[in-house]
Amino acid sequence: MPISERIAALVEDLRSEKELTHALTLLFERELSHPAKEAPGPGPDLLLQRYQDQGLLGSGGMGEVRRVHDVELGRTVALKLLRSELVTDPRIRERFLAEAQSTAQLQHPGIVAVHDVGLLPDGRLYYTMEEVRGRTLRQAARGVHMVSSVAGDWSQSTSGWSMPRLTDAFLRVCEAMAYAHGRGVVHRDLKPSNVMVGEHGVVLVLDWGLSRIADEEGAPSTARTRSTALATEHGAIAGTPAFMAPEQARGDQDLVGPWSDVYSLGATLYALLTDGPPYGGDEPDLVIAAVLAGPPPPVESQTALHIPSELATICERAMARDPADRYPTAGELARHVRRWHEGTVRRERALRILDKSESCLPEAEALQARARSLIDQAQALLDPLPSWASEDEKRSAWAHLDRAEDLQVEAQLARFQHEQLLRAALTHDRRLPEAHAALCRRYLQAHREAETTQDRQETGRARALLETHMDPLPESHPMRARVKRYLRGDGGSPWSLSQRLPR
Image 1 (tube, rainbow, N blue to C red):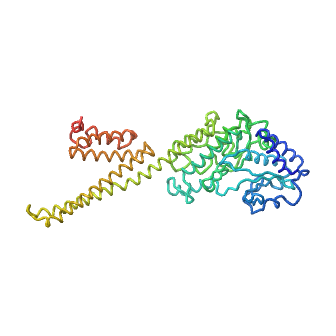
Image 2 (image 1 turned 90 degrees about the vertical axis):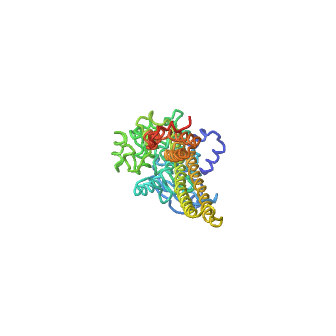
Image 3 (image 1 turned 45 degrees about the vertical axis):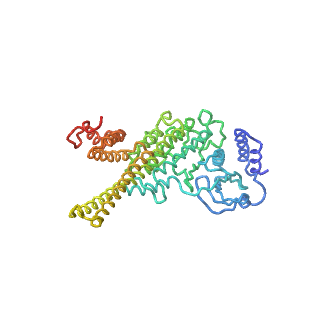
C-alpha cells in the first residue's frame, strides 16, 4: 500500500493525537530505513500524477519550494521537496520529516497548514502546504526604516507598513508561538525572515525545520522521534546565532525550551525596531561568542528613531540572560505587547481627532472678526443719523447687525465643536496631554470672558473645568504651571481669584 494511503488509514483509525504521532513516527522510520523497497505506487513521477509544476518559489539548505497545482483537489499549493543530493543522508531526511510533522500538528491561523506528505520513487521526501503570497516581516521592516530614516521619524512605507503595523504583526507571531508552546512545540529558529506577511493581513510563522516537541514540564522531550536529533547532538548548535538565546548558543539542548523562543521573539522585536539583529557580524562563531559574552547594546542606542520606552522594556525583559527573568510564556509577552499596541492605536486615533479640532478655533476667530467688522459698519451707518430717522434709512445698518449676530452664533458653534472634539479625543486616550492642555486654554479663555461679563455661575464652572483638565497633565507640562499661577491669582490679574469667584 502506498505510504499516503497508510497515513490516511492511520488518521482514520487512531483518535488519540499521541497515538497518531507515535504511529506516524514508526511508519516513517520504516520508510527511511527502506526507501527503495516501498516506493509510493506504480507509474511515473508522483508530481506528474497529482501535482502540476508551476515553477520555483524558493530554495534553502534542505530543499526547494515549488508552486504546484493539485489536480485532485483543484487548488494551487506550495510543495517543499528534499534535494536529490541529500536523499541518502538519513539525518537530513529525518530533519525534513520532523519539519513536516511538527508543522502538521499545529492548527493555527498564524502557522502555515500542511496538507500532504509523501515519498517519491527516487527517495525524495516532500510535503505540500498552503502557498503564502507576500513578503517576509524582515522585508516589511526594511521598507519602514528606509522611509523613516529619511523623514527622521517613524513613517509609513510605500507598501503601507508602519511601526504600529509591525508591532501588530509581531504580536500575532507571539500569539502563534503561545499556541505552539501550548501544543508542546518549540521553534528554535524565530527571526523576522521566518515570518511571512501576506495578503489580507495574514501573518504566518514559517520554517519549523529545527522545531522540537517538549515534555509536560517544558523541557525538550527525549521521547521525540529521531528526526529531531539533527544538529542537536553532542552539543551542536542549531538556529540562527544572532537571534538565539544564550542557552541555545551554548549548545546545551537540554536547557532549550519555550523560554528560548521567548528570547528569540525579543530578538525579533529588537530587529524590527532597529533594522538590524541584536548581534552583528558574518562569522557565526564570532556572533555566538558575542551572544555568550553578554547582552546586546540597548535597543534605543541602535537607531536615531524614537523607541517607545515601553517597547524597549519589553525587548529587554524578553532577552534577559537568565530564562527565569524573561516573560514566563509567549502568551505573557503577547499580553504586554498587546497592551502597548492598543494604547498606541488609541493615541493615534485621539491625535487624529485632535488635529481635526485645531481647525475649529481659527474658523471661530474668523467668524468673530467678520461679525465685529459688520458691527463697526452698522455703527458707522447709524452714527450720522438722527434719532428720528426712518426705518428705511436704518435698514442697511440693521441688516449688518443681523448678519453679525448670525456670524457670532456660527463662531460659538465652532468653539463648541472644538471643545466636543477635544472631549472625543479623550474617549480614545483619557490622559492625552495635548487634549487636556487645549481644554485648559479653552477654559482659561472662558473664565476671563465670564469675569468680564461678571457671570458668577460661568466663572465657577470654568474654574472647575480648569482644575479637572490640569490634574492629568504631567508636573513638568508648561500648561499645568500656567493654570496653577492663574488659579492662585498671580497669572495676570491684580487681585486674588478667591475674591472674584463665588464661594
